[in-house]
Image 1 (cartoon, rainbow, N blue to C red):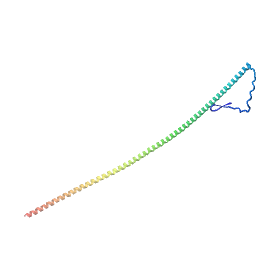
Image 2: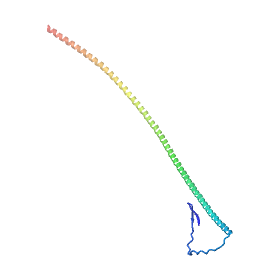
Image 3: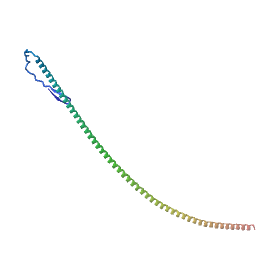
Image 4: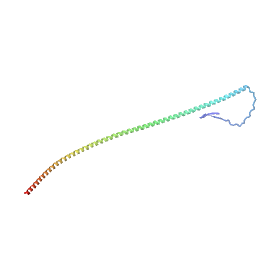
Length: 212
């Protein structure tokens, strides 16, 4: 009979003796013997020794079984500790990898943000340059327009001055024409009066002759 250790505890192997073809022996006839006190004491002592030896063997077997169980428990604890350490190391490595990946992602995001800010700054700079260029063009056009407007105003003033001069000349001509016309009218009226007086004298003369 032997004990083997497994993961769950102890297992025992029992070896059975194969069956024998020999039949039971007939009991030998008892022998009559006179037992003395010494023989009885010796037999009792031998029986006690056998009992103690058997108990010692049992205790030794129990101690061995307990030691094996303790060793199995220690081995189990070591396996669990090794598994826990391996799991912890794997988790730590995974966390480090995740941390490295996260740091790489953060760095990539920072680089993208930096590039975006540079593009925005460049766009703003180009926008400012374009706005300045546009302001210069507008100012230049306004200056040119103002010069043209001033030239147009000056030309208009000259035309108005010439127009006023022409009107003044026309007015003078009209005044001269009016004076000439008035003189002619006066002459015509005076001549008409003279003709009427002469006509009246002729009529009076004719009346006077008729009365005679």
